[in-house]
Length: 254
Image (cartoon, rainbow, N blue to C red; front, side, top):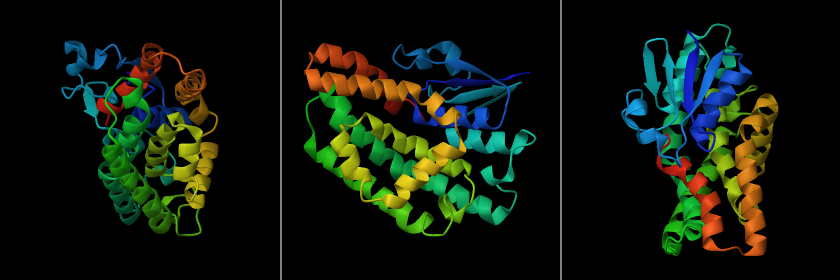
């Protein structure tokens, strides 16, 4: 039976799963779960993932949620997946697992909350919270610094000194891509000091081309809409139509 991937492309983890499948030639059916329409809360979807979050997969009778668990499963179960994605060497696997675990409690809350408090919240009429935004930026900057100084300190182009990307590279880069919706000056200010991180992002894009950009098209469109609306200073209602779509990717994805 064909693998079914339940996702919304505005979800960072969903994009990582979709890109992985496309790059590795895994035959799958993409089933959109529209977060704005709250399709992730329907009884039908909760039969697949009782947590009500995307992404999730159904592989025959087997159901699985949590993006990192899904990436590990796909890399191990499907034949012909190149070893660099999730190496057979148990020591390298353990290192990759440590990066993935770190991601959920550091980079992810920093990036997601910063975007929420700086772009999405004001657009949706949520009262400004400069303190929360500052705290999120501190976590985000600290996370980027650790990526650069710890996991990109080797001679390789990828995390842990790798010469080819792993599932950790794909997951973390998709997370950082959410910063695309920021005002350009803020995005440059945050990412600008981290030259190795910027090169790593470009290397991961190149290694997964053309699928990386294709899956991210929806994010690029949202970025363009935000930029246009900032320049024209539209009404809150018009901004909310765009922001609401992006907001769904933060509250209900893992």
